[in-house]
Length: 110
Image (tube, rainbow, N blue to C red; front, side):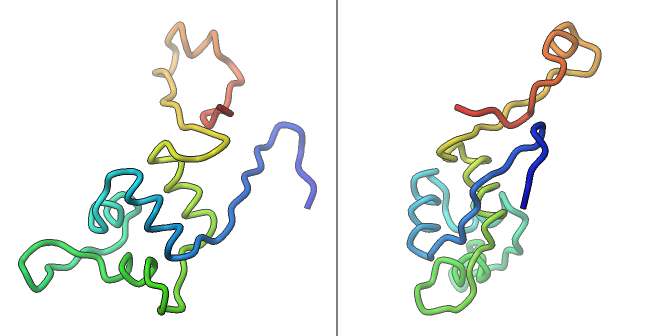
């Protein structure tokens, strides 16, 4: 697949359950917090707290389900762990910063 010079290509491998768990714990998030960050459903657990059966399955080494690479890349970006890029908030439209940085990408190489 060829890319135009002005497009951004991200390496987006599918993580193993162990890699996903390591990324979540490095971000300091519970399974429920990580699931909420990416919009996965939450349920009330047996002890009354929130849980995500979807996230539990994604971290499981015995479940066949796995997180798709682009979703994992977004998780890494949102938690500041991506090895090559970071997210930056755009300045408000029409601000001095906005006009001075014309053409910059919202995802920046580190």
